[in-house]
Length: 208
Image (cartoon, rainbow, N blue to C red; front, top):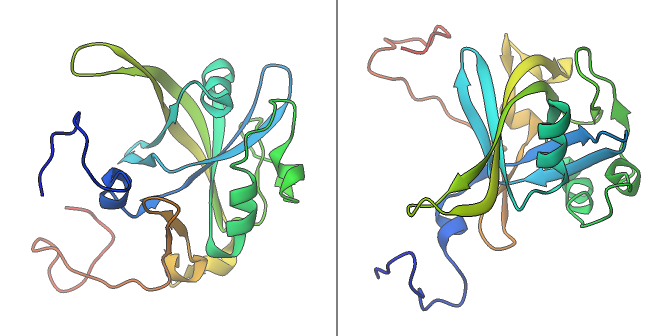
């Protein structure tokens, strides 16, 4: 089938998110200007670059996480995992800004070294981020979309030592949760290695 993206697709459900899948989940924690703590998952999330390390998440409407990251200049990312799927799901609920999703999901908060927002203590890995920009995206006609993209630079990384094996972060052992389309999720419990033509026989940790 083919359909123009601005026209009806004729399917029972929109396939866009199911095609762009799986997507990592940005479990974003912030503090607002009044000191209220917020935690929410975002499936429009990913790494942008490695040197310096940057990541992004986007918010449909200016929700608490994006607004707080913009106003305070800080946020954390914690890895959502299969073991934490219920807690992640609870934190996706729409609640008032004064309500703490950590408490709702019965999650322990862990402090950061360089920034104020907490991170999820039970997560295998978390990143402290300084906000570089919060930009409302424009469509092809230069019209505002009320979708806000936050870009942050990673300034600190926390890793639970049990997930470090032979000098690598053991992704399969951490078992990250990924978002697909509709209400579908996927888990990463198996990985395989594929050498690039420029790598030679052994990966030495340098991306060429």
